[in-house]
Image (cartoon, rainbow, N blue to C red; front, top):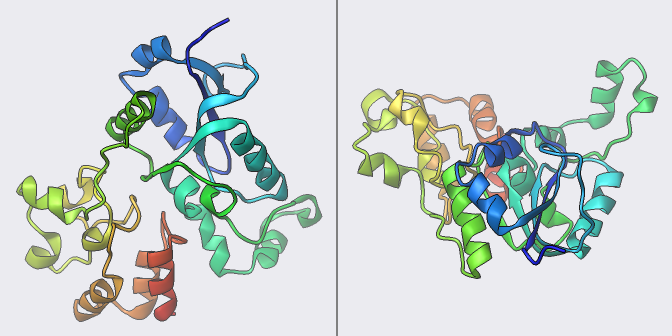
Length: 255
């Protein structure tokens, strides 16, 4: 019987992108030597029964069945880490939270009576206690390596909570808002993505969710000064992390 820590990876409502990031992690083979991968259906059908030392959860809760399942996973996990925008903020599917789900079912599905779903898509932390949230759509492999390594070493992960503007300036990337008048969520978005969009003269879309102390009101006022109308501003705030509290509340102010 293995005496290595048991690692489990679980999927909820999501696109699988964050699980693919786990698979894309260069240190995965080295990690496999340090832990026993006990449940990871993206990789193998082989399953080892819990309890688990570390559970990584991707995806949001969108059904009553998933709400029950996450409670069972929490009960069998010593540490639970949520990864990605879906697990930490409801994901792109949380756009349903601002609409009429019953109407969506009626319009989209030939047999809406076959579809069982909750009216909302919510973060895992709204249902159970989460030990650490790793942002991103998807998460980055570098940060994933840091978080897993930290938990195995019994220390706190060193993940930045400041805004994406900090690495932008460090890398010498020209500010798209100052130079081109392009709306950008960088000032209120947590760093971590590598500021890919501004490097290609596109505004940040907020993939990594709100930074530690986001001044969303100031960002919204600036966007309006640049000519962004209220409907467009609402759409800007409602994307990958639409149900993150800071983005959600500011978007409601402009409806």
